[in-house]
Amino acid sequence: MTSPPAPPGPTAPGRHQRSDPTPRPTLASRGRDVLGDRLFRYLCLAAGCAVLATLVLILLSTLQQSWPALRESGLGFLTDSAWIPNDPDGPGPRKATFGALAFIYGSLVVSAIALVFAVPVAVAIALFLTQVAHRRLRGPAVTVIDLLAAIPSVVFGLWGILVVAPALAPVYDGIHGALGGIPGLGSLFGEPVSTGRGYMTAGLILAIMIVPIITSLAREVFTTVPAADMQAAYALGATRWEMIKGAVLPHSFGGLVGAVMLGLGRALGETIAVALVIGGSVQVTANLFASGDALPAVIVNQFGESGPLHRASLIGLGVVLFVITVLINVAARFLVRRAEIRMRGAAA
Image: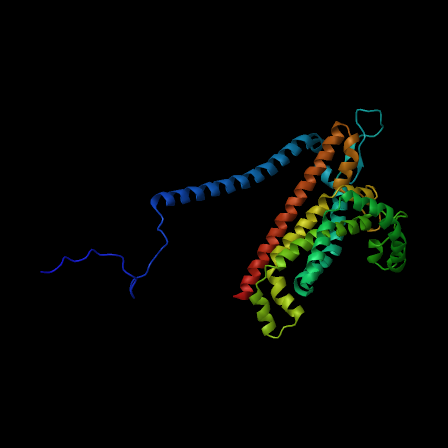
């Protein structure tokens, strides 16, 4: 007689069998994952909408506060360069006139000067730290750059008015003596003020202030360049500069534009440092050595002593600065998009 067959037990995985220790997700776990994804998506959407709503509320509230001045001045608020903050109801013989053109011009000029001096230096420092410097040198250099970014703006302003401006005054005189007689350059490098406080000094101080910001962001962007692209450039016989020009800079163009825009935003919104070294003159002139004023500087200097219409005009300057910043960021985004499309077309 035959014995009954033994019950089937665990068998070792054969040639066509494969053990899978990972448990399959159940219906409940799948439901929890879907719920978590939806919750995370809604939280991110709410955070993004909150940022946009905050910007819209800021714009609407400042427009409401500045509307009396904008209604009184009309389009002349943007096209007139005269700024006479007299109370029309007071004993003064002149009626108040509020024109922001001189301050808009001053903000754009000092910011452009700052970018001209800061961007090449910041990009060169970032390239040195990521492509040339030894690892032992990168840590201390990055620490120094971060510490420079943490210095308060009032310190830069005091240093500028006490040290930089008096030291640059004879330099401005020498440049004016050498280039003042050349057509075109003579209008840019005209007669400087004796104190050295003007557009050029304010631009140089701003350049020193925004170099750490652009450097830190550019360094982070350069570290994202794939090593395979750089090694491929070297394999084709490229030098280090050719590798940087052909692989690093094209890949980092969008990030570099973002870094420059953040530096420009810092330069446009700087108040104390610019107010101390720009001179405080209400004028529109091509002379970079002349004194002038800027939007944030005039707001911080005059806001505490302003009447109702004057205060509304100062808030209107803030609205103008807000709009300029938004337009510059939109233009930068458009530039980056066009460059990316051009690079894709060249690659294809």
